[in-house]
Length: 366
Image 1 (cartoon, rainbow, N blue to C red):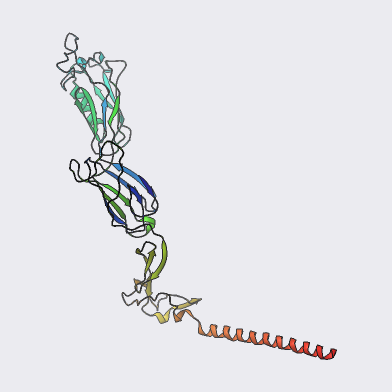
Image 2 (image 1 turned 135 degrees about the vertical axis):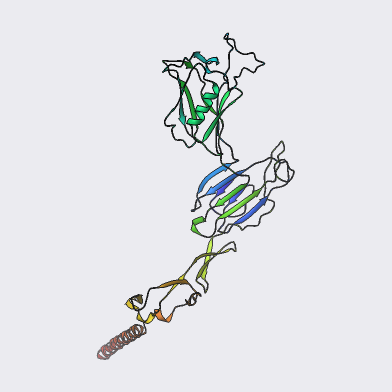
């Protein structure tokens, strides 16, 4: 029903997205089965990306079927079903108001957009003679448009995308106004193309660039089987019967293990590896150039830095909440200590001198 930006346990189809490594499945109460599928996708930062449902292929069709006439111009009887076969001549269609004779202007133009939304270029063109059939027109449409195919179904020209999913198909048939003329109906969308799969699945792709992709799988049972979700006439609701995930959590503390892994501990009890520290080693560390403030740089004698995780390739280990001795300049710290001590002594002498002066002033008054 609703999606929010924090993770947790789904309740009544409500996804509360918890910290990384969420992996939960929800099983509905067993009621009557209806097939249903939907997929939601999130961006790396956790923002919503897209929603898709059951796969469907986009289909366009003429709004009314083509009808045929006999040689006397009478519409074929209803029992025949008023629809032409693919071998019907274009000139025998009831929609042809000016017959074609094979002249230079006797043409049918095919325009529109391909399945990917690009314009049909160059536009299709069928030269029509007295022997041109509906099948010839269908073949010319198929040779012109990309990503879809046309066929004649119950008198209607039907254009079907080659692949399931969203498509941008459009088609228009028209005649040259200076030659033969057929009044073709417009094409409309009979079936919208949609993307989807056979499962309801929520996927958060590497939320905030931390951890692994998260997936929440909903199992509503199989279509036409009594092992999943059903609906009766009346007010209904869907609830979670069980879940194996974690409640919503926020980062409360962090620690560093001996191999340099930075672990985040969340308020829901989940611990997640957030990052890993690396250590640089040198073939001859004694030859490093001292830069300043306890910084060093490599040179030809020291060799280049070899970066590796702790506890590998002789890199040693990392101590959590510890200060290395190499980070302290002993001579500098002793100098600072002596300076502080002398300052204290001077201040003490100043107070002692002031006390003596006041004592002498009191004695003079006496």
